[in-house]
Length: 156
Image 1 (cartoon, rainbow, N blue to C red):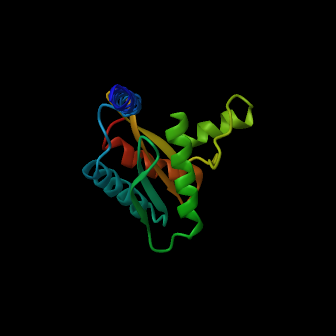
Image 2 (cartoon, rainbow, N blue to C red):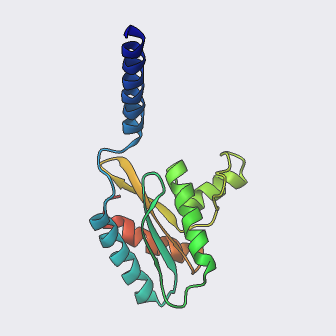
């Protein structure tokens, strides 16, 4: 009887501590659907205003997409590139282009499955990274311009 009690207690405490550890990695403010919609609307408007057909990703702090939009005329390849930029941004906290420069200089470790092209930006709110906005389909600086338009309506 005591052994069952002890085993149950250890299991409950273990689950509690693992939940605590996971909670520490989650920012105080979570990028939600409404925020993602505002970011996507702004990014799409910037892309359309400039005549760029691209894929735009709004991801949460873990790099999981909250919203993806592949515009008409955007190449299928842009989808995977935009996701790879989100992975780099959320894992490093850097703009994807800055990550590329640091990687080339040998100053940072490679993110497995990441990509070094410009166009991914972190979403910062109250000094905390809560996600990323990425775009792919135009020049890197243009992708970044679109991503910044989206990220700026949330924070940064």
